[in-house]
Length: 274
Image (cartoon, rainbow, N blue to C red; front, side):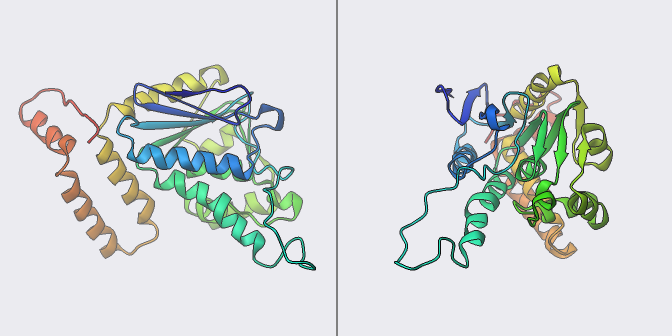
């Protein structure tokens, strides 16, 4: 399956269980309009239910990951009564929920592992898209920027939620208060990325990781992802109950039973993804 129409802002292709989604607006460093964001949401939601998809790679074209929201291409406004303001109270918050937060949720709730392959700039919402992914591989020329403060904007797209949980409140505030560029090497030290590789090895490395995940027990990975994502928001008793329930559900899957059977029979496991 492929979608590579000339000029498409979001390009996707499926190869041997790996769905690669590419943000494809290199002229604006892959800034995302509202329609682009909804397209990615749709692809991720479809990936959850598509048994052909077993891992996802999210990347950008033209030497950039994503420079954030495209503020120059706002969505078409709904008709308004005569005399109504161009922007009414509630409009901005509604847009954040529908187009920015919804994309972050789609990444975090996708039932397949999502790898960010980050080259060049990942700014604002673009950085948060990367941080929402399950694994982050950065090229040595990647830069992460909490750019909001430079425009007197409050961080959105889940930034405060994600960063605080990843690096703690003091470091999160430092990045958000100053808006300085964070190099790939510094991002790795902070724990924002898993590994840094030369730029010409980025997609190959992401492909290797995705291929390994695509050959794994897909439902087990989905349950593990859900447990980890929820662990910081619940108390111990709730987390332990979720763990027990996840293990119970996992042992009802083919791959769960296959993992145990292959161990007992001392042979390699053959996982099918369900």
